[in-house]
Length: 341
Length: 206
Image (cartoon, rainbow over all chains, first blue to last red; front, top):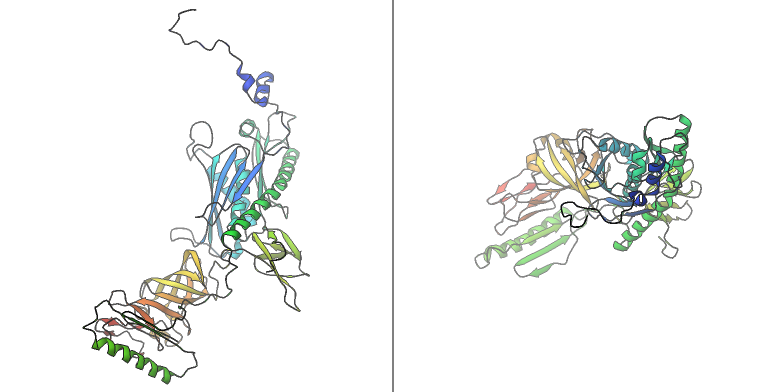
C-alpha cells in the first residue's frame, strides 16, 4: 500500500532460502530425509606446518577444510611438587580445548562440552607411538586448541599432535594419523569420510580412527551413537584406516620442511659428544688498569711443592703490592687471582 | 656427514635399513630385524673401516637433553639441610636445559673420604655452582641423586660470605680463597671453614 510507514516491508522480490542452502540440506527439506550428495570417500585438503611457535619445544598448525587447530608440546620436564609422581616410564598429558569462537552458537560451558573425554582419547591415541621408556620420570605436555571446528576435530587434532611431538624431537615409534567418520541416519546410508560440521551433527554415529601409518596398528578408536551391526562398524574402521594412510605423505613433507627450516636457522653441526667442564678456558696474563689477572696452568702431575712455591710467590707479590699502595688505590680495585690446576 | 649427496630427511617410524647392513645409532630403534628412525631429522651414516656402518638420525638442536646415570651435570644449590643439599640441574654436559631439573646431594655423597664428618653447611651454600655426577634417577617421589665424591667434581664458583661481589675460586688444595682488596692470609686446607676478618674460606665439596 502506498505511503504505509508503520510496517517494515520486505524486499519487492524475494526468493526461497532453499536456493542458498548447501545441496545436502536442500535435499533434506524436500525429501524429509538426509541424503548426502557428496563422494563419501573425499577428504578435505590438509595443510600442516610445524615449528612455528618459538617458545614451545614443538608445535604444529593444521587446517583440514574449515577445521583449524594449533598444538604445542611442552617438556620434557620433571613433575612438580603437587603433581602425582612419575615412574620409570614417562607420562604424556594431553589437553584438548576449544576456543570460545570455534563453533557457531552460544559458548558451551566446560562442564557441558566433551573436552575431557577428547583429551583422554587424544592421550590414548598418542601413547603407543611415543617411546616413553626412554624418558623416565619425565612429563610431556601436549596442548591442543581448536580455533575453528569444521568437522572431525579430534581426528585432525591427533594428526597435528603427532606432528608436533615429532617436531619437538621426542623419540617416537611412529607418527599417528587421525581421521573422522560419520554415518548418516537411514537404512542404506554409507560411511562418510572426513565429515563437515553439519554432517557430524546430523549423523547417527560418529567415529574417529587413529592409525600409525608405517606399521599399521590402530592406536585409537572413539565412536558413539545409536548402534548398527558390527559389520558396518568394521567397514567404517577400514575406511578410516585408508583415510589415515592418505594423510601420511602430507605429514612427512611437513616434517621435512620443518627440519630444513631448522637447519637453515642453526647451521652449526651437532654438539660434541662429551660434556665439558664449566671451568673457563685460559687467557694470557694481562695487566689492565687496576686489575691483575694472572693464571697458572699446570698439569695434574706437577709436583705440589713447586706449585705451593709458585702460589706463594705470586700471591706475595700481588698482596704486597696491594698492601703498600692500598691508600693510593681507590677501593674499587680488585685483584683477581685465578689459579687453575 | 658427507655434504655432497643430498640430505636424506626421515620421520619417526620410517624404515631405514636391515640390521645386517648397518648397526643402529642414536635416534633409531630396531624391530623385526630392521632399523627404524625414531626422530624427525637427517640420516647420518658413519662407516668405520672394518666394522658395520652406524646409522643414526640427528637433529640440529640439542641431542642430549636429559640427565642420565653417569653424566656430569652443572647445577646450582637452591637450599641446604643438615642431611642433604637440594640443587637445580642447569646444564647436562655442555648443553643447557630448557627446564631445570631438581637434584639432591646427600651428606654421604659429598666426599669420598671421611663421609661421616661432612657438614653440609660447610661444604655448600645456596647459590653455589656445583659440578656433580648423576648416580641415580631416584624413587618416584624424589629427585635425581647426585654425587661430588670425585676429584673433578665439587663446587666451582661461589660468592664470599662477606658479601660484595667478590667471587671465590678453587685453589690447588681445594680451598676457596677470597681475594678482595683486603685479604692478606689464607689458611691451608683443613676442611674447615675459617673466617679471616672480613673474608671467608670455604672447603670445596670434596
